[in-house]
Length: 80
Image (cartoon, rainbow, N blue to C red; front, side):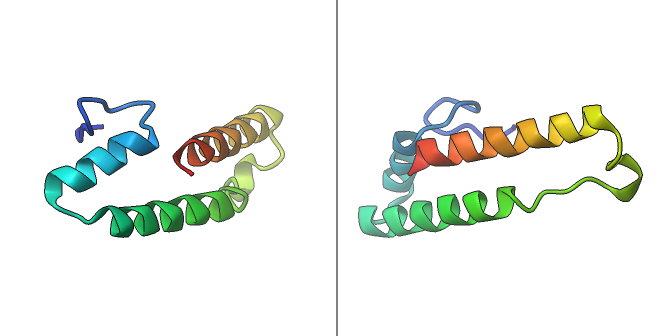
């Protein structure tokens, strides 16, 4: 990703987003609400990811979709 938070562009943690909030002058309470909303939406939507119809019967594609869902859930949990 082109955007770096707290000097990182991978494995971002809650503190990285909170540091960004402080840097741009966003009150901590507002940042907490935004992070809670983001993580809730990511968790909810991750389970709805689906493959295009032509790929649904192909097991490697299903395995990859499941892995992506797992990664999204894991990283969302790290932000909570």
